[in-house]
Image (tube, rainbow, N blue to C red):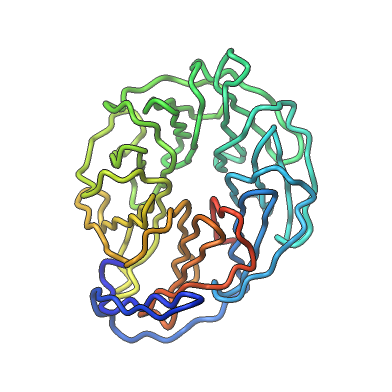
Length: 316
C-alpha cells in the first residue's frame, strides 16, 4: 500500500490513475484459500482471488457486522444476536446465540471463539464464548458500554468499546478493565508482529504488546478509522499494518508505531480490510470492494450488491 508506486483505481464507470510507491516484480501464487465478506441485509460474498465475487445465501436479512475463521469454522455475527457458521463459505447455518443484542466483534484463540456486542438491555456489554461456534455461553464483561471489537494475541483476548474502553482476558471468561487513554470508540484492531494495534472513531491508533498498557500513535488522520489488518508489503514482503476508515482514509505502518497516510483517490467510507495469499482486499459502503491486482495495482471490483460491506477475512 504505502510501498506501491502506481495504484490504479479502476471504477465501474471510469478509470482514475493515482500515484503511489513502486514495487518489485514477484510471481503470482495459487491457493485454495477464500476471501469472505459480510455486510448489510445478510449479505455474504466469497472470492478465491479477490477479483471475482459470488453472492451466497445467508438465510438472514439482519445486518452482518463481523466474521472470523477458526477451528475449521467460519463464524459471522450481526444484528439481533445473529450468529451463522459455515465450513466452506458457501452453505451457512443459523445458530442460537441466546441474546437479541447486536453482535459486532468476533475472534478465535485458545480454542475459543469470543463474540462481543451491545448493551441495549442496560446491563452489561455482551460477551459470548464457544468452543465450536455452535453452542454459546454468555459471560460477564464488567462494563456497561457497548463492545465493538475483539482480537486475540499473546495468549490474551482484547475487547474494545464505544467509549475507548479496553478489557482483557486470558480465557474469554474473566475480564479486566484497562486504561486506553482515549474516549473515542474503538471499532477495529489486529494482532501482528507481537503487538496489538487498535484504531478509533477519532482517528486514534493505539499499540500494546500484551493488552495491558497502551501507547498512542500518530495516525496522520482525524477521520474515523473502522478496521485494521496485518499482512505483508507487496514491495518486499516485510510486515505491514493497514488501517481504513471514512472518506477513503487509509493509513499504513511497517511496525505499528510510525504511520503514513495514503491518498487512494476515493471518498468512499471503508469498513474492512484483510490480507491473504499476497492480496490486500478492502470493503466499504454501497458494495464497494478494492483488491490488489498483479501486485502493483489496487482495483475496484464488481460486488453485485449495493449493501454496505462491513468486514472481510481470508480463510486459508
